[in-house]
Image (cartoon, rainbow, N blue to C red):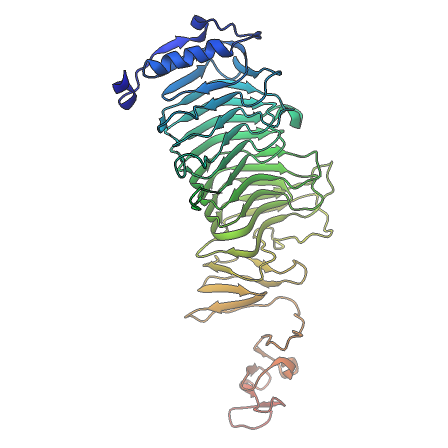
Length: 493
């Protein structure tokens, strides 16, 4: 039998009724189902079948190479005994080796939303889990996290959760936040790597769909989540009842996170501090890609608070202002002071549509064509390359910030609200409107050609500044004393 654990998994299917489980929602079936799980584990692994029914439980321990399979999350339910605290299920934390090939599928988890230690699935192992699968699940009325993966400082350094797949999972799904998770739907800390989330959805839940963060091991080594894929996920209707900061997805110190065709909508819309966000990136997070998808009805669409390297492309930002919330212009993308973007695309092929909005006290970050992206609070450490033609960048507070458009060249840097362009070509910058003169003595370049009467003021110019006078039909320059203009012969004009 030991050979079986190290080789191919033998399918040994047992029904929990063979061990006395009732599934009537009244009888406590913990002992019977645990016996079924342990029996399959001792036989070398296999499948424990949960036929249609509601199984009342304290806490089940899921063992190495054991599959827990129901008939579907509308037919098979694991319900937390209201007289018992803690998780509904937990991954075997005493197993003194890596845990492989666990599968949990086709089950609804109903917890105790008043118990702050109640998780649907809890994992804290000695050496980590690999190649496990969680699929076709529904979590309702969970007191803490739907799925919680804790770093084990007493186990092997890192105790990684790796190469796991999560698919077709619903958190909440009722009509009130109490029917969802009272905290994060998926919480993962420390070594959480190369895992995939596909078609995950929230609907009426209290806090973020995903909360990923680092932890420090006993040796002082910081262990961080890395290489996470979110495919067609739907963080929706997350805490729209309480006035507090809420996130759809929260990433801290994550190394590599990709969002493909994800749909964010309705996150923290009662937050009067205006800090809630569909996606919030902070810490030392590096390498965030958001490709395609939709951001709808938000305080802030994507906030890049701290970290480096982001690629946001092909995203539709849409805010229509729900009737129960004061209609304000939101921030589509916010890049804050300590976020550095290297060779990134911001707003490439993205679409912005705002309807029913009043211009109140918020910065609105799109141009009049509603087709480009806005970036605010960008005072330092911001770099971007190859902004595409007809894309618009707005820097500053939205009302008095600098605007530049039609970029199709070189390297662009922004430092302290000053725009720097390094290029080997001959770029052209057009400043729209009538910009005010700087008060700090810095040079403001205005139009460099026009009639005699349109010559720029000498106040902010320096000696040698060139201007083509269309009235005289010749170039002229500011003289050495910056008191007037001269032509090519040195004659005052």
